[in-house]
Amino acid sequence: SYELTQPPSMSVSPGQTASITCSGHKLEAKYACWYQQKAGQSPVLVIYQDSKRPSGIPERFSGSNSGNTATLTISGTQAMDEADYYCQAWDSATVVFGKGTKLTVL
Amino acid sequence: QVQLVESGRGVVQPGGSLRLSCAASGFTFNTYGLHWVRQAPGKGLEWVAFIRYDGISQYYADSVKGRFTISRDNSRNTLYLQLNSLRLEDTAVYYCAKDLNRDFGDYSSLDYWGQGTLVTVSS
Image (cartoon, rainbow over all chains, first blue to last red; front, side, top):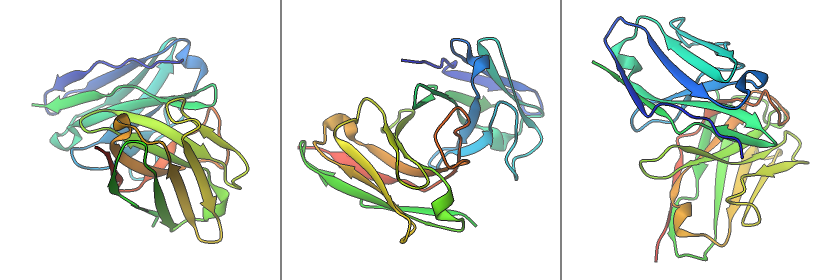
């Protein structure tokens, strides 16, 4: 079965750029999307189809997908961006999630 | 605004059954595909099932295939998940979520999520 690999955790200072990676076999041939889940809340879609932002998502969130790696980039990270982030792709009639990356802003 | 409200939470013994519901509003229900996704306590997201906008096709994760059934009633704007032969490892918060599209494919993304409902399987 298809797997998506994310770093379990990362930290970033306020105002800096956070880049969260998601790796999978030939991932660039698929669409990647990203979800943000804050503690005790439901997930929120922040990037879909590799790089598109849903309405209401701040411009500091961007995405890319090349080779075997999709990347979620948060520019000018704010304290409110502290959350778990999950990548997701579709493969063989299943939705696949990465195990998530806990982003700490400190 | 889009709202998805799950119900049907409960504590069930192993081998038991439960039916979850998800009442939808704020969008044209019969033109979008819908998912169930679960999250075990302290764990990540696990996709469970998808149903097409017209209910004709359903897709399942291997971990629930043959035990869970996804269905929808487009006249009631409601999504369902029938959980049978429950196991301890099915304990999780179950979310319903709307897809950006009507059918299942490489473009599938979940753009709205409910608040989730807790299913506990315990003896």
